[in-house]
Picture (cartoon, rainbow, N blue to C red):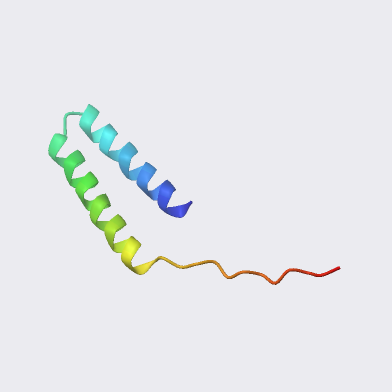
Length: 56
């Protein structure tokens, strides 16, 4: 969920800059976001620990 929010914020910033006519800034924001996503996939992939089930 955290990555989704970060990606959404970056896209919203890029859209705002693009609407204001700052195309290069918008492109730089999206490129920077793509690089951070690729790095995050390599380093931040963790599986959740399974909790033991309770036997009743």
